Amino acid sequence: MNTEALKIAVELMLFGMGGVFLVLFLLYLISQLLIKLFPAK
Image 1: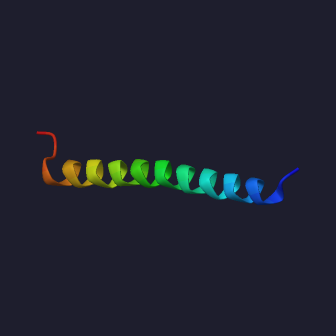
Image 2: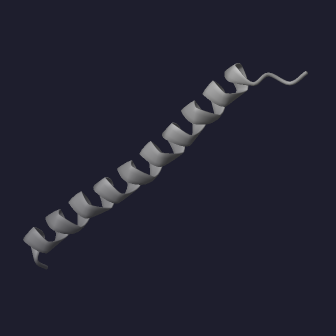
């Protein structure tokens, strides 16, 4: 088994999952901001 390839694969997977969670977090923050700016009547 090539340990260098495994290390690169894990690193790429962490970057990918981190990016997904970052985008979800940003969408959450933006939605909370919009709720505060434009409350329901």
